[in-house]
Amino acid sequence: MLNLTGVMTTLISFIQSQVNIPEAELQTICAHFYTLTIPKDRLLIKRGQLVNAYYFIVSGGLRIYLDKDGTEITAWLAFQHDFFTELRSVKTGMPTVFNIQAIEECELLCISKQDMELLYQRFPAWQQFGRKVWEDAFLKVVNGILAYQTMTAQERYLAMMQQSDLLQKVPLKQLASYLGVTQTSLSRLRKKLK
Image (cartoon, rainbow, N blue to C red; front, side, top):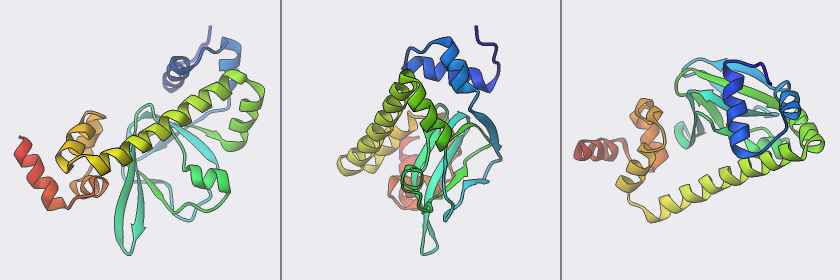
């Protein structure tokens, strides 16, 4: 039996919820991860950086945003048990156009792109895990686009509030940007729903 505690047990539980994987393989896979703690408001990734790792959020949340003409546009929010990366940079080797910032202190497990690829080649179950994770991530993006195109701001806000308690900690300005509304509109919406 694996003798791992703390943050690694969270990752193991997540992996086992996605695929059936032999314990020996799981132990080898987990040995390739390292921990990283990001303080609140600190950047994990800065625009212009090359991204060469994948991340699993053990606790906390991250905001993925663009800075366009001095205005921050929140493109995505990632929370506990999300497995993510800045895929465009990882796949193309181009510098990222995003900043990724901790909403609150985050505990992450990280794995390099090189190790991820080696494990995909070595373990079919890990390749299946990767496929499921990225299919789920793509589905979240598609659902986000559909919500933006078909739901009112109030419906998007209510649906989003069901995702994570951490959304209460996202500053109004950033949450409004993510929803595609002004801060004033979001303030009115919140008052209306109280």
